[in-house]
Length: 171
Image (cartoon, rainbow, N blue to C red; front, side, top):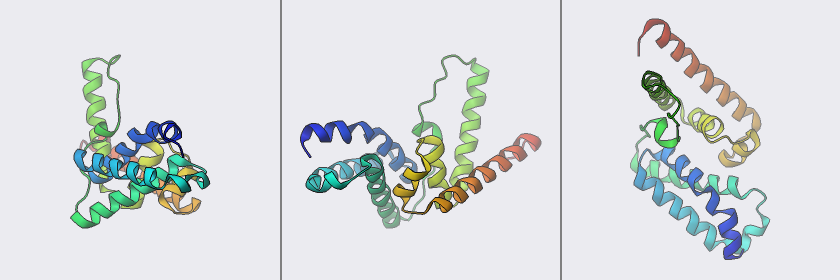
């Protein structure tokens, strides 16, 4: 792989890699470190990259593995809000609507943080990052049925808890 190919294929996904690492680690600096490690690994192994069919999914898998390694070392969980991983536009909203949206996103983030690890990862990759089911299978190294079941359960859990919170005003 040439430098130009590396810049065209790998650099454009670095922000997605960062958001994914940040979502897993919950720490800005560690997420940046993981992305830097991914870039180094990809560049170091550039001779073997011609066999990779989906470079983005492969980079996401490396990001996941490095992030999980760091989590195992530090024994902690992500706790930051979804808004840090997403770029929401509040320009066309009234202040009341923007506040309501912000609170709703905060609640969703908190509910996602309570999900089991696999469900949280699948939901993040599908609903926040926009990956296809096949790409999620490749990134997380699980089969399609596990992806679909995990996503269904995660969405159901978040939806039910949000409905209860809206109906009763309880957190």
